[in-house]
Length: 179
Image (tube, rainbow, N blue to C red; front, side):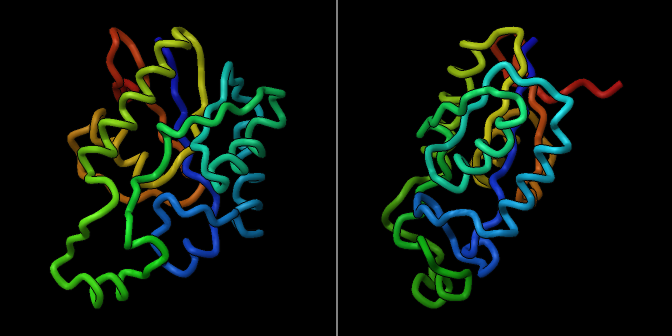
């Protein structure tokens, strides 16, 4: 069995302001760096065989902070990116409701396209690390795509630097067994 720890990146100013980020690339703010350092301390006793990150800097910087105590290099992987929200990027929910009253946008990725991309990346990475423990640092929407594969329970958005554990066995992603 392969154990996959999936962590959401630390906070950015856009998170704090409630702005949709998508493929925009704002950096972590000081709160986000502190969140990442706290999570690194929590994970200090958990060894990783590999660390992968979205190539967006908020995730990559978080991954670098998490990987540093373990001496494991971070591999950037665009397949782990957040959903491309197109013209919603940088907007707050109120601005989206004002500019897109029907709730639709004609650009970016659909949830299905995003999910297909994310699942392909996670499966590829898991197959390359059979029997190992790997850390993926990514985004809230990406974690939702992974959650939807392993659970039928409703998804609840996760806070910055939250970790979801996933197992890979028999060529499938699954939730950890409850004992």
